[in-house]
View 1 (tube, rainbow, N blue to C red):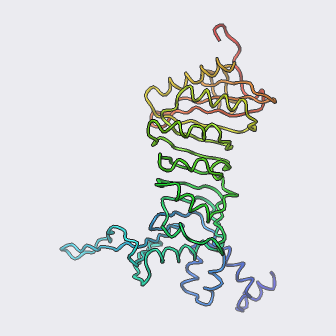
View 2: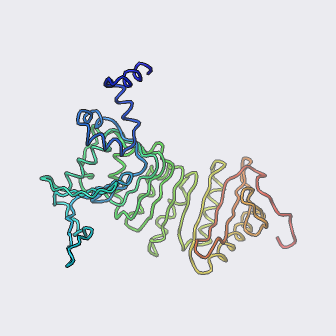
View 3: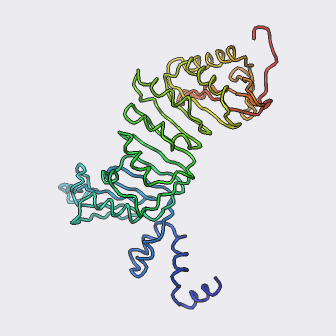
Length: 358
């Protein structure tokens, strides 16, 4: 390393391996500048995996760390009578149009190519993600181009997600299945998913089941379809399952508690229910009281919340020196009310002394 530093300080070019080591640790934007302005390093630069903060995919665009590429949209520049050119407005996307638009770092560039928009998208996708790119923060999936359905995985090193995957309003489970083939979920910490009746089948996949933190918003599910997916919710064993559903019923909470009490869930496993509905706070209090009476629980306080009273907490004994602590309630009119439960070591919660009527 010392010899390399001396060579660089004397103006001598770095060898292949030291050059690789330097390039791998540069930020995405800097490597883009090198690709544009230093032709002799383009081949080496292209072979190395990128490390980026976040990326967003849609059917016709990619955004990487504040760099945005759009494929198949023609900019429609309007020139008013006073001669000033306004910012281009986009016509509807057409993936058969061989155009690419880039914006980022104060630049706005428009390219016309002989390739189709899908071919341009795939070329950019391979350039930035083929060699095992690491995404340190968030991967957003709002849609994917159709070439992902048939693209071969041979020679493609999976994208390494290190933190969070957010699935937006994806229309069908196929979009998720197509992405799974190109992604490594081994280090992923959380999945955030807004489910509808067309895509809710994703919930039963191994990627959802094995993710440490799973945040599900099923508020868009139509009446009559919720029971189809309740079994998935009952059986999921994520370290933290966060579930937003405004029609959750008291008896469904009882079933969930019953399954948790008979399970071998580890200490620290947690469930969060978020609700927006009329009289939702009263509904949560009813959930506390029903579970306390049915499962022989006692009013209690969660040790980490600093509660000043016991009304919004119930502790239910479990096997093997554990206890199930239920807590939550009203936060504000702008936020959903919450009901949470956590598996804790026996004796962790602060229990209220027995009173007549309990």
